[in-house]
Image 1 (tube, rainbow, N blue to C red):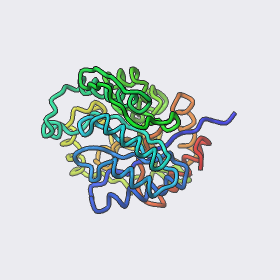
Image 2: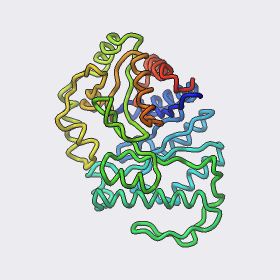
Image 3: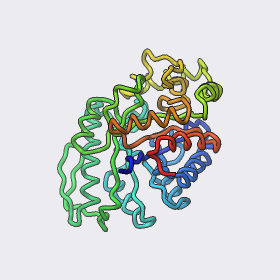
Image 4: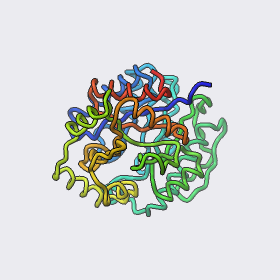
Amino acid sequence: MMPPRLRVFPAISRNRDPKAYIGELMRVARFADRNGFEGILLFEGNDVFVEPWAMAQHIMAETTRSSPLIAVNPLYMHPFTAAKFVSSFAQLYGRKVYLNMITGTAVSDLEGLGDDQSHADRYVRLGEYATLMRQLLASPRPVNFAGRFYRASNLQLRPHLPAELMPEFLIAGQSEAARCVAEETGCIKMQMLPPDLDRGLDAAGMNFGIFARADRDEARQAAKARFRDNQDDRELLALTVENSDSVWRRRLHEGQSGELQDNGYWLLPFLTFQADCPYLVGSYEEIGARLKQFSAKGLTTIMLDMVAEESEMQHVRKALAASGMFDI
């Protein structure tokens, strides 16, 4: 029997330079397209330099097989419009996309956009959004929908989407509200890499970065040279945490160490505002073995933070290949 295949969506490490943003995204997108990745993760938010739907179309036009993972926040777009984009991409490129359903943005952005819903209610709205989108995409007939946040009366999307091009929905929140919505809507639940690595995996999807070399010690030395500690960057993260009600961000930030652990877990890139997730550091074989363990516990999908340099991406590709569950 063939081992299960891991679906991997790379994302560029946090980029604060708008002049470099598109170039880095395209470098990772083209590398992903050539090397067996499913697509590329595209973020959404007031501080994102390029609207993800526009970036997704640019990437699909410049690649042969990429299926972008597009962040979708109900704040920015009606579900009919989002469904229309999905249908349009299917007609233009004959490819499916994946949708990363989110509620989070800075509290100041919520206030600026006039959104005063509670954390729990934003997840209720997110669940309705995903449900209505699915119905619009799948139904050959007009859709009627009555929820707290969305209503539709004889609303039809033409043409409806073929089953093989239906998007898959992911939910990246870590709160109880996020867990409930994921279960109710059948979305793939995402979680952060757990510190102990051996326990705490209770979702089909995981978010982390990989820093790998042929040798364990070499990987650790190179990682520390790449991601350096800096008090100014730590203070910048602290400010963003204060301006957020994100459960996962607060959990990662509160009482955590930036030390590189013996098992390869490393939170320093997150704590210094250089990445949005923990990293796994080690040799190709070590990381490949960890991925096998994760897969045995139900992991199918990875959001993977990557340094957008050819040499670093090649190291990541070798670590993924060592798992035996990644197509090159």
